Image 1: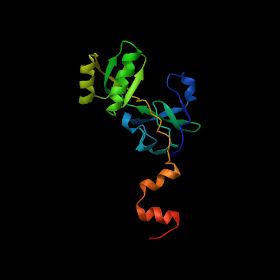
Image 2: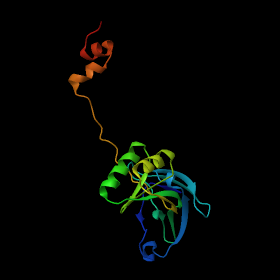
Image 3: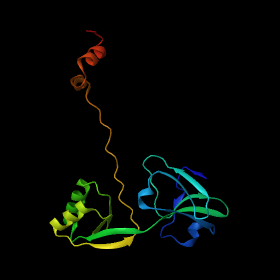
Image 4: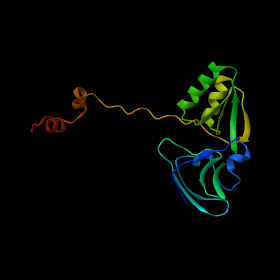
Length: 173
């Protein structure tokens, strides 16, 4: 089975979202929620997914459906550290510190969750933020990539070797 798009997401929606179809689940870990996936459903059906750039899989995404069956994503719960924060300033500071460590985070109302990481726990200790371990689905925030930047033409020669600069200028040494 080849899937190139998410048809819809049914998390938290009534059973009518499934259209009365039997659901064949694809169980995956949070780290497999990228745009590419090659696995199989619970019933053994092979599944290959390649989503458009910028899209990722989420819990309860329907990636295939016909008249009788829907194939949907089930993100398995995992152990996470949950840090309740007192206010938005504390949340911003903690998010910044964890981002500096490149730790994937899930942001919910007044709490931050992340996969256990020794450096992150040291930050929590230094900031005196309490935390607890939970087992739940982890859906980290997807950060948009930085926009593509190009060097101004008048500065680009500075970064070229003398031979490259001469060939671009039309002269040879």
